[in-house]
Picture (cartoon, rainbow, N blue to C red):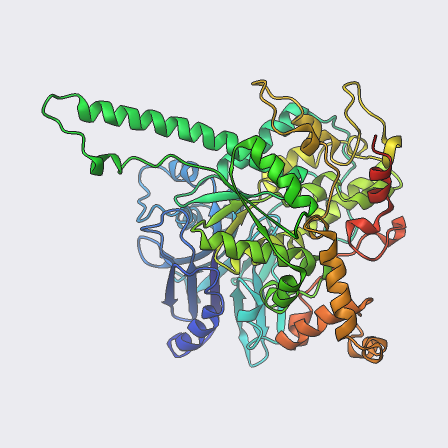
Length: 595
């Protein structure tokens, strides 16, 4: 991950260089490793780098061989080696960066290159081989990375791009969250969708494709998720896994542990081969300095956070012990979380209650992880949207509604869980990768008949022929209930653990503590007048008022507020407006009906 800032369509860009760098510095937490700036004929591109792949040679902006195409990227391109091969031997590369193939792909495929990329990315590409210069900008299919686009009435010909809102807030009076799966082209000022999977349907609210009827292929679900994890272990720096002890993060940790073990074995064999080579001749000494050139034995580290004796800490401890990871757990207090909320909102750039609740522990944990020298972690976001894992899905009236809600939630992941995972980690220069949002896995899982994803509550949910409960995300649990090598992926108590939303799982008193704090901060008089202060997205609780008030103090413009989206369960399904998982009756019912 990195931070990018760009302006296109300005006269005498050199005069704007100092201001552009000042805007980009607001993103330096995203890329503390290096900064780069390119000043063109009518554009400026600034890049703040977090070095994960091509550490020594991948500084940006990147330039084409003729120096006329300039690129700034935030993200990771997992298929960059295959793309390099596909471009043929005549294409020369200057760096080992996974992003550099985009330059050659542009020359060959123009903006159609976006469909060829497998990864998480936002990029701005400037083409100065044409007059006027052309800029294209794109964002990955689901919006794992963040990107904003802005315009200023003071510079009507200019268009701005930045990885975070804060870099645009003072200059632009119109700002949008750039739509995932789209590409912008200054040549005709168009923004068009390039990501068109079979399950997507239209872009209107509630619009979904034909309801799938494909039976769940459990082996395919398992192998595509394993492939998704494998490709995301691409790294030249220390990495780890976020482990809450829930199903999703535990599965990602389990697969990561298996893959890391394979790498460890391969590197051990390489080390032994090197030792044999160095010792083969009678006069050939084995030098310790030579052995250090061999890649070190990798260890998978796992990280969890919670209040003292929270459900997540206890479950994560059990999962980590089973998987044999080097486990680190961090205990925080409600007061520490409350103290961090203003900083969390500054980095999140949203006033959504659910996102702030869940991001605060993640923000605190990310700081600890980065302090240990780890720069990349794998995380379990996306599974609940893809498979209907949120507990309120039990209230879906039919399979069609269930599927349409899944599609809607996946389409809007960039406003909630992706935003949380990206910004709460990148606040400390830590990159989070999310295997569940792999394009291939999405294609498989989103085309499963929703009848196979549906569940009901408590003991009435029934069991299958193996005695496994047909609970939320049943097909995912079942896909990993047995292993081809006979070694279980997870303890059954973890594999079949009921869903806890992250903000609940870190300790129920965390949410209660925020509510109690907001009640002391927000007066009854102020709360009664909330609709006149915020006629749009009016807060419905004192907690929401408290969070919105902090957001406004940091980002006072209407343009900034327009980019925030609230995550709210389906009220027409009889769900409470409070997004906590505990507000759903199934949470209590499932525990009450457990044998």
